[in-house]
Length: 171
Image (cartoon, rainbow, N blue to C red; front, side, top):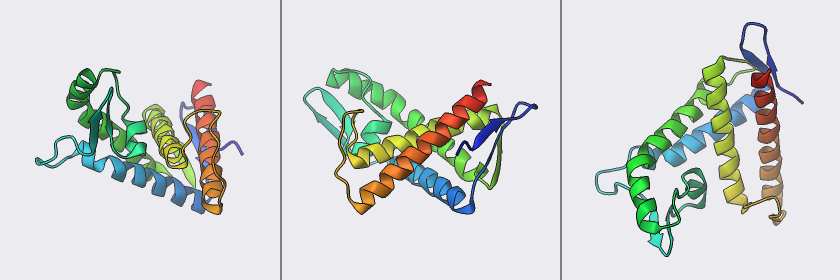
């Protein structure tokens, strides 16, 4: 299945089944929700869920840590960089996820800006799934259960969509 194709007028188009549209919108909404506390934290918790220790300053949730990784190995520099950039990055990631929620349909048609948002958000969805499955690199082994097999299938499906989108935009 290669869902995306380039059109002569500069758009990219894809046809999805209703279930696929629902899954894309649900996953994008979940990524947006995961980032919500970072993009708009409360005054009491300006950097929610951070774990500071050793050489790392990361969100406590492994999926958030994958979405918002450390910029520096040194904890103090990384914490300062995070303080200055994390909300904006989380907000941009939320906005990209919202583009999928807003534009996914059985007859999806994207301009260049929306296509880039989809690429970014598809990456984020795959990062969250990888974190939940414990995938760190190509050598990672996942304990196979019914749930993990389903998640791996979605992970691979998203990768196929992303690949077709990149190829369509590149044409």
